[in-house]
Image (cartoon, rainbow, N blue to C red; front, side, top):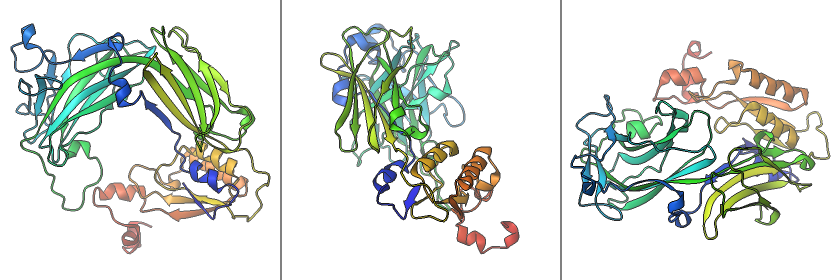
Length: 433
């Protein structure tokens, strides 16, 4: 969504709002702060130092290889007694031209619904020109089956400028869910057919690394306080500052010695609201309502931080906006301020409608054809889109349809070799009319 013909009175707020991306940041803390969370928060540690424990196998205990056509048997994982972080041994995967992955199936790593979990690890790539190494973590149900919707991946690691070096990666697993029982972990090397999901150029030849490896070491799982920060406003945009509030929940299985603070900052980093928040024990998950008062129009961000005496255990951030109604009403034919709904990064039409109504736009351009295989066209007749159009017309907004690209069904039919809208319209009309 982009603005057009800015009204000076609202342009500053609109530039931020019309990206229409409700933002919730979930970063536990900076790398330096989480580097030493302490043994009281450590749930499990994979250091792969198993020779002294009697493991004489080639593979660390309880790690099993993925099977199937994309994960052949000759792509393997082994102990490496010469390399490690901070010291050998480590777990090394060798791709040999194909994908390879090993997952942990050993003693259960239990979880508490009152907590979030942070997984940190050291990963080092070797000759990963096309392939990438990554770690993933996810929750398991009571049958020890992965809950697919909970899987999170670390940063993809390649070989930086031809140099091998250890990289610290993190994964945050938000807590909650009735079916959640344990944590699962998987180490991966995957080629572009897996990690690069975008369309390929015409006559593209997929390259593979035939002698690529990655080391994994010092994998630690930490228990963190569970923090949730939400608003009730569509798209996190309040249209009446007197009704603006945040819903904040902080739970932890062991809250002794913890302190939780809320800070609300405006777009210029001025603190406009602070509060001390209680920490619940996980048995009660009722959200605390934080009134924001009569605030000026603008873009804000709220930070909830959970600290011990000298560490930040959790830092959650939410971006929201306050846009009180403008004084003037819409006028028929008044298009001094309008917006363009772009194909990419669209929100739910109900959220869009709330934001457009708050901005009192006089004109709107909306794509009739999306130009995307994954986004429905306007003419597909989705009920929510019909509601959006009906309410806009009822509010006397000038609505203009535009072609953002070819129809979505033709894009799907074309596959990876998409045609431009101009090329398609130059063809026989019977193919697209």
